[in-house]
Length: 466
Image (tube, rainbow, N blue to C red; front, side):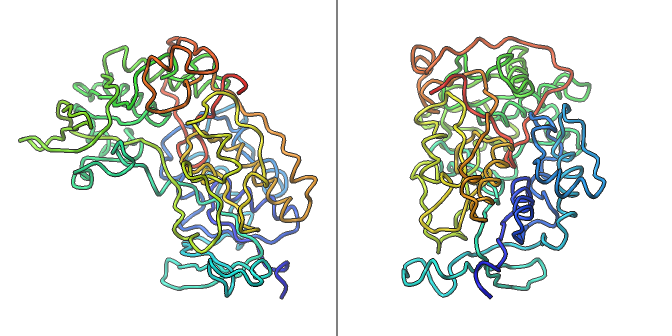
């Protein structure tokens, strides 16, 4: 069998992985989707209680809907409404996986990818060899699958960032694991609600997930069973006009409302903000409560629980035998990194990009979806769908279509200065950015809007061209 007759292995049956499979099928190329979880959308299901800030119309891949789902009689959800993670998984991802049939294998963990008979250092005939993908199944079986190309859409959900300001776990962080979560808690679950009700909780992070947690805790504080609930919001930088996002200027209204809900939590006294604090250590007081210690020696008042929402990072361990070209900061493809690097800018919509920006020295391997952004926090589902459309066209040899990348992302309506997370507050508000940040305006929300965290939904950058 020639390499061209082999399937394309897609790692991960999340939104972008399944979309990749749909585009490959449309091109007449056989995909094999390997999902470590027990069902499609396993990561999304873990935040099923969180509502996305994108509408149904923005989180359904056109090729998947038209070519695979429509023939099954699938009912398309109202494109103007906002799904929760659970809605996304049950009403779209699972039907799409079912339509793909045995092309999707659940309980299949990829533990290694290489070239057949060639480790990382061997040059001879390398590009003529197929990829070999080592798979371990939930029942203990092992298999090696040969592939013409590999699309890694495994995301970053499994590798959350630590609380420590240095990027490493803070001292005592692992020992305090019984009081720490790295996910937005589901406060509608009675057991989880009881964990936070009437308690003092630290929320570490400054992105949309942190906004979500603050809004949820504020809602709990205002409920009958939440008396005494209070949040301590810990930020590594100061509060400026850009801290809470673009508000009413955000072209994704639910995303803007999410930041305003977090602002309301602070304004109403349900949360206190601690700025310029980089966590160095977790200690316990005499009552067993956690005391956070900063790199500057500051010690915060004790808290009962900690929610760490400092972003995610890609797991590259199983790709170690491949020759990847990754940016040294973001761990994103080198051609893509300058477009999304918060160290360089936080203004301007991310430029359209496709297979060329996602390529590596190892031809035929692509990191797509949230994983393609490495540690950058600016990703939307529609970005991933356009990525895999371009990649599928490139694998099929349709260079004209692959290069024709047309995507306009909704702007946030705000700039965050130079983009540096640790930039002093004064620099962010006094000429540190490319445009002035609007002052957030408080709006009344029926219920806190929320971000579909890591799977595919995260804030997109931009208020003006960079």
